[in-house]
Length: 109
Length: 521
Image (cartoon, rainbow over all chains, first blue to last red; front, top):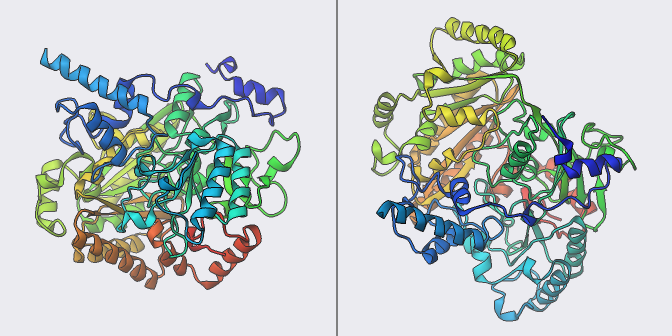
């Protein structure tokens, strides 16, 4: 069930007649993605996991270093869009690269 | 601090000295980290899918404000220095020509505002099914918020949408696939920074202490919200949206039709069901060449030059189980309501004498049914990114003429579009998204942007599509930045004059997105 205690913004609005909105937190005050794995699943996996309908190379199978991943994320390539810092920040990109390295390591072992 | 060396381009009509002064003022408002200049930070913003040279559409800087007050200050600075700004919700629009500026000379290299840091979900009323959002909130963030807080409301989203903005999509009058799929119809109340820096709250938002800003669209006097969509009269910093209560039951289904010409009978069969709200959602009629890119590579059946030959399309349909037309729709309500409506739908298909109908159980987790079923309940996915691989080379333009929901009209539009596209060497990757009485005929003109000839042909093809359709009384509802002038002309000189009169009254210095929708001072 809906629990208004979970929505401080709503409580604030109701208390102030629907107009006091200034204290609502920005979502990017928190991490946009809690981990590299989740960021990869939500942004990259559709195109980069080696399915028949994949759009780009399989990042879980190919050995791309973090600099290469960063380059293509920021520049795009052909059908791949370029992602701005506000979409995927530098920390998240590093986490994605680390996540992919861990997958490849598991595969090799 | 900004240095002259980091500036690669300046807005047309603004001297480097003026621009440097403006940048210094911007930095004092939003902070140096939120004034993006230099190749490294701007490169991700500059890639476009349009058949143009990306450098002609390069912005001179990107600003990332965090509050409406900062936007007000930005606008005042723009007026002081004559610097034009092009607002975008999340910094990018992959599908419709992206972030960039008006195509006409004299409006290049505007400063872009990326609202990604203005991403507060200000209010969600679970009882009324309303939300008040800032423009940088993404569909993914809104859905996550509803799920994390166990709020039984559904979002209507376009496909693909995880990193797109509900406010941005609604301002561009985009559509989704649920019963709330006509997004601007489900918008209620805006906050707008006007070109002079004033802050306007539309309709009930103007009444001090009102709690009905997000429930009553009209307020009193002229209804203003519409003039801030697809326009350049102000910068929207908050928007109210209506969200659909999650129904007790949901039944997506699929109807397959074999022949291209079946589109006429499909439309005439579905129209009464849609108008009577038996089928309440934004139904889709997807052509085989829209179905295929979501699940297979083009090279599986054809890897040659030009449009995919009909014989190969037929071979692909047969092998993959695609119809020529593939209808996706859903029923919503209680199980009892759905049972009654399901009988009405299946009776209509049976009476037509063609079309095979399938339920979710019949489709057993296969694509593209699953992603379509998800979209019709507001479930986001990236399945349609496959379109961008279909032709390769990263070129894409949406040609989206409006059509009347009558079979004869759709047959005519489909044939016209196919003939023009195929003659220029492009596939007809099209679908119809069904409104109450209208339909959006959405075609993705896919081309290889790495090939100069293919790119030139794509531009010429788009120009011919717009011209030819205009000669038959058709026009698109939305277009990318490279074709805004041509499309504005389709709507006639009087509309253009009225749009310009409003622009001159509200934004006499022409500092907000000059050229947007063909509107200038």
